[in-house]
Length: 242
Ligand SMILES: [Zn+2]
Image (cartoon, rainbow, N blue to C red; front, side, top):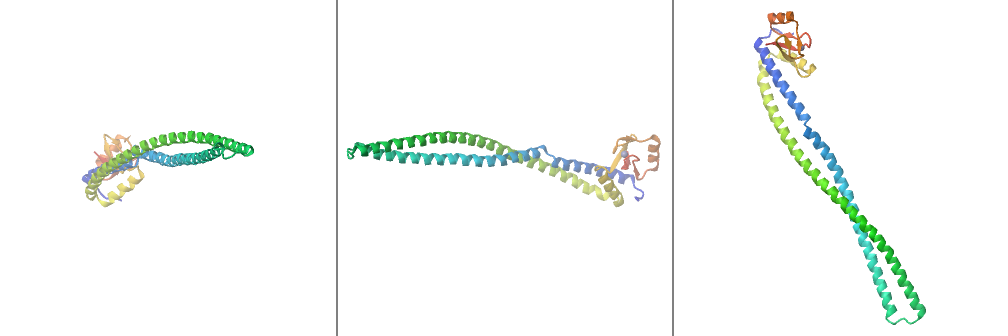
């Protein structure tokens, strides 16, 4: 049970409550910065885009390798055709059977080359598409990365400001707390824990500012007459009569 309390200690308790309320508000603000929530979302998107970028880069490079491979095949066939045609037209082969065999071979090589060229065209179209995709992902990645950096700086700055304010209010609290009797402080802390952070409230014009209830005139009269430690009948908070 808290013994007789001086009015000065109660007024001081109300000042402590103001600091505690400010601290609570600042802590809540620090935990619920909209910029921090947006940063989280932006960073998730950035991670997706980084992985998309990797996949698109692989697809583009793969198309490039396939293109080189097909172009290599085509140039080998061209060389072969060149050699066979040279044999045909050099006059070195006079046997008609052998000549027609050479001609058939050249025809066959040209058909094969045509097939590879068709495939190459498809690959070139795929490579163009892969490049367009890659560019578009790269653009979005760049924009998202810049936004992430910007938000991260904003969150850092806002958090620093809040920390500075918290420091001021905590210092203030440390100055006030020793002026309050320890048993009153213990009671205040206990109520504060149970009552949404408010342990002490002023009684202004007959209204408890903790629960905003107008107390009966008779009760207010009694509170004023008795003085000392009083609690709101409705919310049980410590009442500081103004
Ligand atoms: Zn109340």
